[in-house]
Length: 253
Image (cartoon, rainbow, N blue to C red; front, side, top):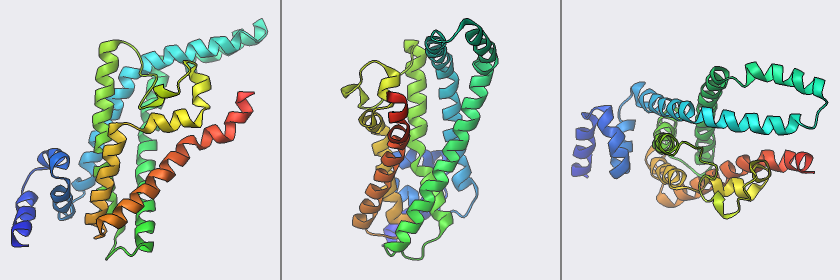
């Protein structure tokens, strides 16, 4: 017990950038150290790192996603009368320009990351309360949830590096290649394709950190933490496929 307390106290003296690496090889001790620091930098620093990594990924990917969007738009415009098609192209000159796509991608994407983080915290907070979490507070869970998203930042940077080197988009993320048809519009309507697309090492690493973080922040056993994490994972996958289930029939013909 004394050795464990001394370890946490020593970790409290470490700068945040070292804790960013500690989340990789010593997640349990790192979460304890993070939650022992009542500082706003405890959540702001990793959140900024995630957003910066996302912005880099978006900046690298947008030229290729823009080209794909224009190709798909042209296919749809081909079925319209000439006058309507020209009017639509005139509107696309602004909405499908690189600066607009880049700004909206980074802006709305960053907002979605923050909303997702708050939603994750809220879900874990209320389910942990129901499961009997000890002396539970929203703030520490929010800090914990922010740090569990760090694998996403590494994923963004890795994907940006791949796109930059290969000069093309990653059109089959995760395990989606197992059911991919090559038609992105058709694949986007396939719930199984969307679920398999989420299954990669980054997301699984995130879930592992949620299990460890819950056990520390909510003072729960690993069994309960694992159960709540599985519920959280199921909800996440459900929300991932929900648009395809709602609109797939309408657009699938």
